[in-house]
Image 1 (cartoon, one colour):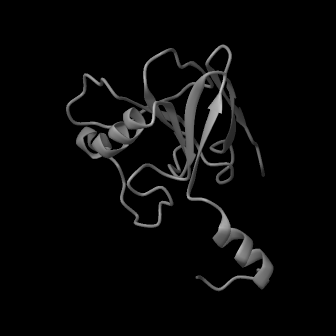
Image 2: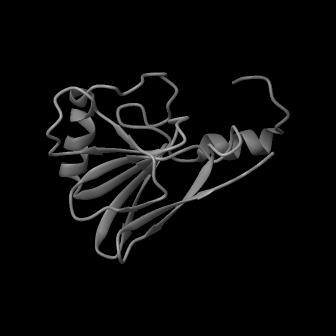
Length: 142
Protein backbone atom coordinates (compact mmCIF):
# COMPACT_ATOMS: atom_id res chain seq x y z
CA UNK A 1 0.00 0.00 0.00
CA UNK A 2 2.92 2.38 0.59
CA UNK A 3 4.81 3.83 -2.37
CA UNK A 4 7.56 1.42 -3.43
CA UNK A 5 9.59 0.25 -6.41
CA UNK A 6 7.96 -3.18 -6.73
CA UNK A 7 6.41 -4.19 -10.04
CA UNK A 8 2.88 -5.62 -10.21
CA UNK A 9 4.08 -9.25 -10.33
CA UNK A 10 6.07 -8.75 -7.13
CA UNK A 11 3.10 -7.04 -5.43
CA UNK A 12 0.78 -9.87 -6.50
CA UNK A 13 3.26 -12.44 -5.19
CA UNK A 14 3.41 -10.74 -1.78
CA UNK A 15 -0.38 -10.44 -1.61
CA UNK A 16 -0.70 -14.19 -2.23
CA UNK A 17 1.59 -15.17 0.66
CA UNK A 18 -0.19 -16.58 3.73
CA UNK A 19 -0.28 -14.52 6.93
CA UNK A 20 1.09 -17.50 8.84
CA UNK A 21 2.24 -21.06 8.27
CA UNK A 22 1.75 -24.11 10.48
CA UNK A 23 4.40 -26.77 9.86
CA UNK A 24 4.62 -30.35 11.05
CA UNK A 25 8.24 -31.07 12.02
CA UNK A 26 9.46 -34.17 13.88
CA UNK A 27 6.01 -34.96 15.27
CA UNK A 28 5.40 -31.43 16.53
CA UNK A 29 3.43 -28.59 15.01
CA UNK A 30 4.96 -25.11 14.85
CA UNK A 31 3.39 -21.85 13.74
CA UNK A 32 5.47 -19.19 11.98
CA UNK A 33 4.15 -15.65 11.61
CA UNK A 34 5.26 -12.05 11.44
CA UNK A 35 3.58 -11.23 14.75
CA UNK A 36 1.32 -12.73 17.39
CA UNK A 37 -2.34 -13.77 17.07
CA UNK A 38 -4.72 -11.92 16.77
CA UNK A 39 -2.41 -9.72 14.66
CA UNK A 40 -0.39 -12.22 12.60
CA UNK A 41 0.70 -9.53 10.13
CA UNK A 42 1.61 -6.90 12.71
CA UNK A 43 -0.40 -4.37 10.72
CA UNK A 44 -2.67 -3.42 13.63
CA UNK A 45 0.29 -2.02 15.57
CA UNK A 46 -1.01 -3.76 18.68
CA UNK A 47 1.87 -4.52 21.00
CA UNK A 48 1.43 -7.52 23.30
CA UNK A 49 2.58 -6.50 26.79
CA UNK A 50 0.19 -8.23 29.19
CA UNK A 51 -0.29 -11.95 29.74
CA UNK A 52 -4.06 -11.83 29.15
CA UNK A 53 -3.42 -10.57 25.58
CA UNK A 54 -2.01 -13.99 24.70
CA UNK A 55 -5.23 -15.88 25.57
CA UNK A 56 -6.34 -16.10 21.93
CA UNK A 57 -2.93 -17.41 20.85
CA UNK A 58 -2.89 -20.08 23.57
CA UNK A 59 -6.40 -21.21 22.63
CA UNK A 60 -5.48 -21.40 18.94
CA UNK A 61 -2.33 -23.36 19.73
CA UNK A 62 -4.19 -25.74 22.04
CA UNK A 63 -7.04 -26.28 19.55
CA UNK A 64 -4.54 -27.03 16.76
CA UNK A 65 -2.00 -29.03 18.80
CA UNK A 66 0.79 -26.48 18.20
CA UNK A 67 3.87 -26.66 20.44
CA UNK A 68 5.73 -23.47 19.48
CA UNK A 69 4.84 -20.14 17.95
CA UNK A 70 7.74 -18.28 16.30
CA UNK A 71 7.16 -14.63 15.45
CA UNK A 72 9.25 -11.64 14.52
CA UNK A 73 8.29 -7.98 14.48
CA UNK A 74 9.68 -7.30 17.95
CA UNK A 75 12.48 -4.85 17.10
CA UNK A 76 14.22 -6.13 20.23
CA UNK A 77 17.80 -7.47 19.95
CA UNK A 78 16.99 -10.41 22.25
CA UNK A 79 14.60 -13.33 21.93
CA UNK A 80 11.42 -12.98 23.96
CA UNK A 81 9.53 -15.87 25.52
CA UNK A 82 5.98 -16.37 26.75
CA UNK A 83 4.68 -19.58 28.27
CA UNK A 84 1.17 -20.96 28.21
CA UNK A 85 1.41 -21.92 31.86
CA UNK A 86 3.07 -18.69 32.89
CA UNK A 87 3.43 -17.83 36.54
CA UNK A 88 3.52 -14.13 35.64
CA UNK A 89 0.27 -12.23 35.96
CA UNK A 90 1.19 -9.06 34.12
CA UNK A 91 4.18 -9.16 31.80
CA UNK A 92 3.55 -11.27 28.69
CA UNK A 93 6.94 -11.53 27.01
CA UNK A 94 10.27 -11.92 28.77
CA UNK A 95 13.34 -10.96 26.72
CA UNK A 96 16.50 -12.92 27.49
CA UNK A 97 19.97 -11.58 26.57
CA UNK A 98 21.46 -14.86 25.34
CA UNK A 99 22.27 -16.51 22.01
CA UNK A 100 21.29 -20.15 22.69
CA UNK A 101 18.19 -21.59 24.31
CA UNK A 102 16.82 -25.03 25.18
CA UNK A 103 13.10 -24.78 24.49
CA UNK A 104 12.03 -27.96 26.23
CA UNK A 105 8.55 -29.48 26.23
CA UNK A 106 6.39 -26.57 27.40
CA UNK A 107 4.08 -24.82 24.92
CA UNK A 108 5.52 -21.39 24.24
CA UNK A 109 5.63 -18.33 22.03
CA UNK A 110 9.03 -17.07 20.93
CA UNK A 111 9.43 -13.53 19.66
CA UNK A 112 12.60 -13.32 17.57
CA UNK A 113 14.94 -10.38 16.92
CA UNK A 114 14.78 -8.61 13.54
CA UNK A 115 16.81 -9.83 10.56
CA UNK A 116 18.12 -6.35 9.90
CA UNK A 117 18.50 -3.10 11.74
CA UNK A 118 21.00 -1.48 14.01
CA UNK A 119 24.48 -2.96 14.11
CA UNK A 120 24.67 -5.88 16.54
CA UNK A 121 20.91 -5.91 17.20
CA UNK A 122 19.87 -8.03 14.22
CA UNK A 123 20.02 -11.82 14.07
CA UNK A 124 18.67 -14.78 12.19
CA UNK A 125 17.46 -17.83 14.05
CA UNK A 126 18.14 -21.54 13.71
CA UNK A 127 15.89 -24.03 15.48
CA UNK A 128 17.19 -27.58 15.94
CA UNK A 129 13.88 -29.46 15.97
CA UNK A 130 15.42 -32.72 17.19
CA UNK A 131 17.13 -31.29 20.28
CA UNK A 132 14.72 -28.33 20.58
CA UNK A 133 17.55 -25.81 20.69
CA UNK A 134 17.23 -22.29 19.35
CA UNK A 135 20.32 -20.35 18.28
CA UNK A 136 20.53 -16.70 17.32
CA UNK A 137 23.23 -15.86 14.78
CA UNK A 138 24.10 -12.17 14.92
CA UNK A 139 24.38 -10.22 11.70
CA UNK A 140 26.90 -7.43 11.97
CA UNK A 141 26.02 -5.14 9.12
CA UNK A 142 27.84 -1.84 9.17
